[in-house]
Image 1: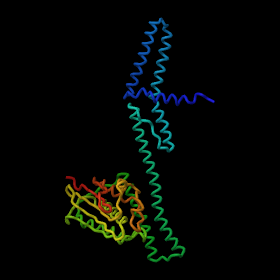
Image 2: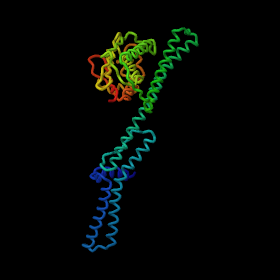
Image 3: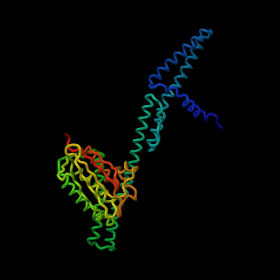
Length: 363
């Protein structure tokens, strides 16, 4: 049985209670006070020696011991944060990103500890995002691949004939897989910052009419027969009719198509999706809104709808919807940010309203 084990904890608690270096906002000040303290103690001992006729050797020994104790005391306070950071760094090297260091000090070591904790939090977020990305991508790829494999196995085994309807089902799964890969490539370009912006002027009405036509065809032939939404009516409202805008037509197509597909997916049977375009504040700027009649987005969830792989609650999807990949709104936000615009969920008495603002041509 040992009696010395509780001592480190007792010393640490005593140190935490005293924390003599906290009043100093600089390590230089702490070291300066160390020198001053050593000189004061030595001077005091010399004064005592002269008053009590103590020998010089004794005074020298006591001065050295006192200086060493003070130096050790201060050195422990200065090196403790570094020792703690070393321990946490070793834990992070083994994959534990939840560890943090104490950052209550007010000197340079306190600033270093604060920056260290911020870096650890960023690394933890990156690690979490990486794991979620791998899991979500694996899940999203598995669904169309499994569907395509089932169709082809039925054809090979003679369960289903290779008629146009069966091949159409296989084609739909292939198209869904292609859309997912294309979205992942867009996100990869987003992260690498290699997507250029080719902005030009165009008429809004014919442009949006063509986008809605293409989107209507895509929504009417969904990833699976049960996902088709031919019952949803798409309505275009552009005012004035000769409205023009200045933007990258390809990137804006991504924004409108993803927003409309998302609105159709969440619409009730025989619902209505409206795309509304108005002139913005700047020259050739554009205010765009996409409205649906679905259940809407709860206020607490609105800040998360543009995150990657966020597919919303199961009760927010329309009939026959597969929930999507959770990438469309993230790509829409990226494309809007690329223009220097803004996108967000606006208040609406019914359903969901997504508002997009593009700045147009720089004056």
